[in-house]
Image (cartoon, rainbow, N blue to C red; front, top):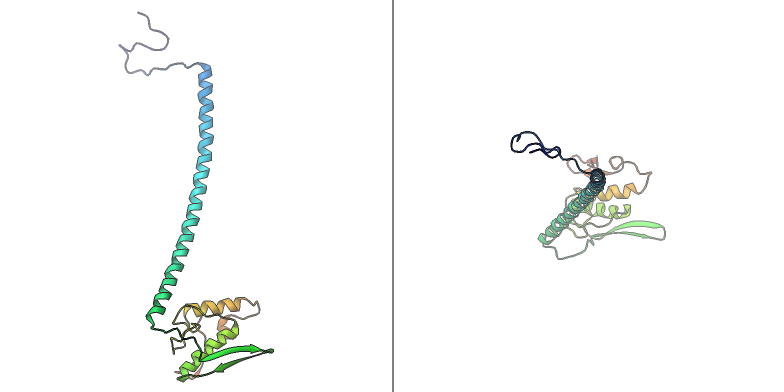
Length: 190
């Protein structure tokens, strides 16, 4: 019995690979399909990379949002734990009228509390707003007799000073009175 084409003798030669000759039209069709699949793969890979990048951007925004929520929750918890009755900061007031500016001090319990009140009102004179940190000098409610800047106070100072290009760095412009040394010390800002 004679073998047909390149099929070989399967009964006697099991180690040789079998090669079949496909019709020329079929080879061209398969090559075209392979090119098309490679192009589609390239487009899908490009889309996958774009989606991964967008996903990274979304995750970064979610992380920032979560950090803001944690901070807001911490501020709310701190405010809730102060036992504050919601009395506004009325020991002093910054005012501006008729081209003049002044600070009225209504009451203070100690020299240190006077410094806190003056610092708070000077903050308003510089353009700072109240913040939610109850330990802050710029808190709307009285919670401290200690003149210590919080991160929110520093952010507020940096913000109002950044609004003017002519303002010198904070370290050169602001001083605090030190009761221990009885002299003005530069404001501790990083």
